[in-house]
Length: 116
Image: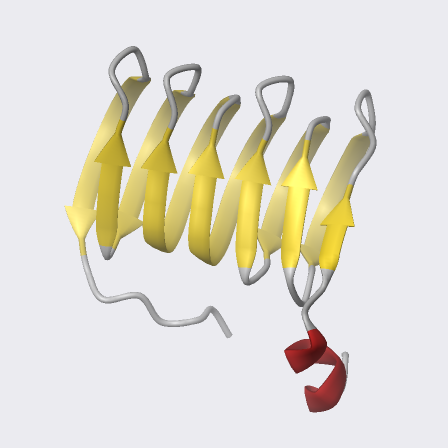
């Protein structure tokens, strides 16, 4: 996998609108997801854009969901924006839910530790 220096470099990744990706994805910094992803996503920060849809698992210290998510969220600071539609389980250190966001599932507070 990536060496330690590359992982700490961070940066910003953006998957194009309309993209469809399946698999295990790792990003060393922030990733913006305006397309469809099925699988596992790990990053320092994840943003599911309004047009984005993710099915599976996401792990990040900071997670912003503006689009659709179905599966398991594990994060430090998790924010569900007004347009968020979430089904599944959210494990968080801090959680904010804007008025209008829809959530169906379980939420539980727990200290965040990076996935291995």
